[in-house]
Length: 34
Image (tube, rainbow, N blue to C red; front, side, top):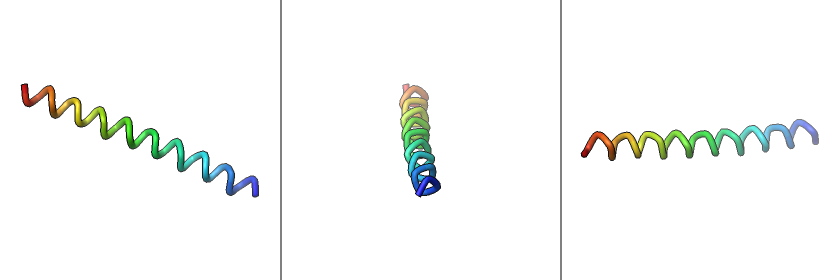
């Protein structure tokens, strides 16, 4: 049970990090366009 909870937290954090990375890359591409 505890292990499942830890995995869920890790997956949630990974999703948040991925989202931030995607947003950062998107902003950089927009900046390069200008």
